[in-house]
Length: 285
Image 1 (cartoon, rainbow, N blue to C red):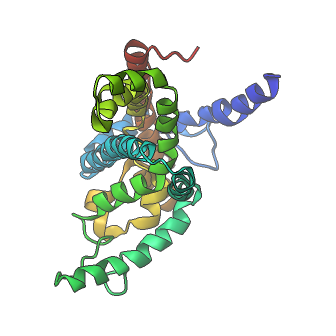
Image 2 (image 1 turned 45 degrees about the vertical axis):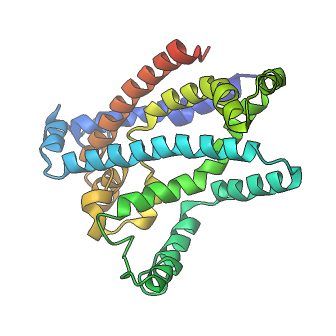
């Protein structure tokens, strides 16, 4: 039963890793892997000397970190609020509505955001004008663009993450709430002293496992929303690899950038699983 899955993994995940050798060559497609000139660490040295690489690395870490923090905080708060809703139909309706954006691609949502945030016809700037504020070019202003990425990503994904925390809440022993009520605890104190401690293991687990995504700021989202005007604050490692490798056809340098990111991500994922094991007793096997 495992054989088909193992074959797929070997074919699509491990066999393509032969291409890592491109990072150490002046790769020429007509020569292939084995006849291209070997240059060692030259591309990595050039990579760290790029004037904008440090900024791209910072943009990636900043955007991804903000997404991780808010992507954990918002679903927890929303799950706590939704848990207090007593009308089942209304509760299921709200949960479905906030869950739907998860299934939409960033190609679709990118077009929606471009329309909504347009400085001339967008509904957001129309609302700002009602309060006497000047229009803001959210997708073309380097200061606002990273926050647009973070907020829109959290809006898209928090409904999906809420399901995990609602499941954690339903696993809490109801007798704990009865005991807290007998001791005179109101709804707020029950949430603080029963619900949150009951959710703590899954919160710790989700936060530690998310460490491996520090360098994954979301290529699909950024690629569909960014422009040269916001490269200084919105360009991330994945979009840099795209422009270097596919647009400029510098395959070796692009592979070196991707390999650097993969190595750092491997270290972070290893650390996150170690922390998940120590703090939440989570094991892969």
